[in-house]
Amino acid sequence: MTRRWVVNSSPLIVLTKINQVHLLSELCGEFFIPSGVVKEISVAPDNDPAKLWTINEGATYIRDVEQVDPVIAAWDLGLGESHVLSYIYKNPGYEAILDDRAAKIAAVALGIPVRGTLGVILLAKQEGKLKAARPIFEQLTQVGFRVSTQVLESALRLVGE
Image 1 (cartoon, helix red, strand yellow):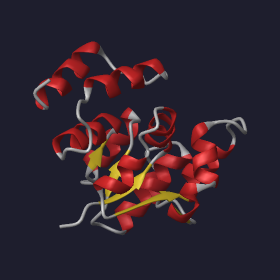
Image 2 (cartoon, rainbow, N blue to C red):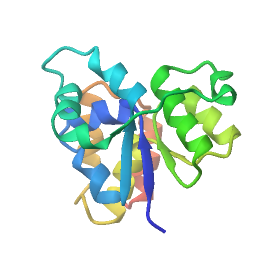
Image 3 (cartoon, helix red, strand yellow):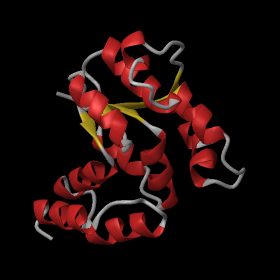
């Protein structure tokens, strides 16, 4: 089955900052960015890597999501997370790519498959798109991605590093 992803702002922001956003298109057959995610990213400074990527290369991946499903709205998440989960809730067969803890909890409770930025990096390593995950994890933490050392070490063990 072809992977189909709906991507939230945090993965886009950190992957563009470390020049690894290309992994999204390399790892799945289809991905898109909901309009609510783009709205969140658009408030960044004009030189922000995610904003620039979204305006230029990412424009073809943007999809309008007009309404937040009431089931998702009840979780009181941010606009981007709500658009990601609403779309998948109404259109099964996609996986949410997001890092927000509350959104991950909501996704799991609603039966929506979810993967975070670390999961994308691990998948890229497993599929030979990256030679090593450790340097990428180090870059993520350098650009402000918050994750515990224990989680990083566990993730590295999963890919034999």
